[in-house]
Each structure stands twice: as C-alpha cells, then as structure tokens.
Length: 169
Image (cartoon, rainbow, N blue to C red; front, top):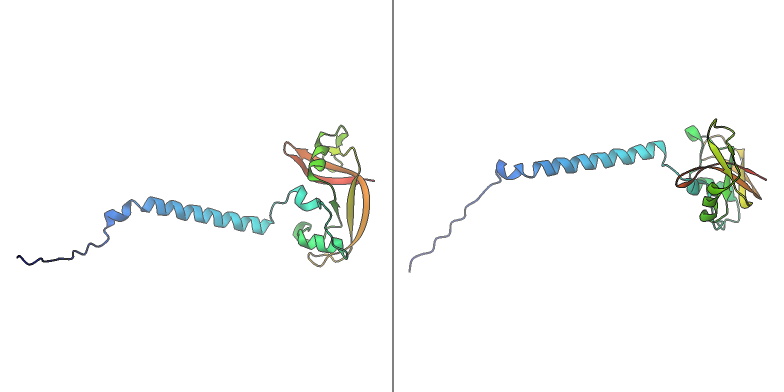
C-alpha cells in the first residue's frame, strides 16, 4: 500500500478575488452615508410634521390636568428658533372629516398669503385652543386651555389639508 500524503495548500486572498466585491462595497458605503446624512438633516431642521400630527387629537386625549402643556411637549410644538407659539389649536374630529374641508364650497384667499386659497369647514368642530400665558423658549412654555366649537380654515393640496390657518367661532 502506498502511503497517502496529504498536503495542505494554503491559498491566501488574492487581489483578483476582491475586485468583484469592491463595487458592491462602495455602493453599500455610499447608501449608508446618504441615510446617515438624511437622518441628521431631518433631526437638525425638525421633522416634517403633517397637519394631523400637529393639530388633530381624536379622540381627545384623556389628560385631566394641563392638557395644553402636555400636548405641546408631547407633539414638540414650537415656533421658529425654539420660541413658544402664542396660540395652538387641537381639533377633536375624525381625520376623514377634516379632510373633507378641502372640498368645501367656502373658499377664500388666505389672509397671510397673497394667492393661496383657504377652505372653511361647513360644520363646526370641537377644538381646544391653547393660549400662551408664560415662557418664551420651548420647552418652558405654559398655556391656558379653552374648549370651543368652531369652523376650521385650512390650506389644501391634492392630498388634503396642509396647514391650519385659523378658526371662526
């Protein structure tokens, strides 16, 4: 019988083997960096908030004390440069009913915008109006709460309401 001789060939990683992976690895690094910068850009400028995130609280949150102060902090509602907003409105109505305001026949030019159309709701909605009573810089804002019913005035695009322009009692 002939002796069996096992020889271990050690084959190292050669440059030719890595060449095929280089484009894939470069693409993965570029995607990672894009996602990283995109996330940081959103966090620096504040996340883009929809009208629903800012103004709709349906059904109304069960917060017995300091509703406005709690909601303003929870929803991170603030003015430019972290200032306290003088007034903020929460609408206690189903989002689909608020979306219907964009089909309202009550149209008019918005007060602060030269050519933008505003739409007023046909029915009154339950709302909470938060009036600033103390503080100038977020998060040290203190609000007084007033419950009311009123017509909402919004701007719209093809997707529905974009921003709350005000209300009419």
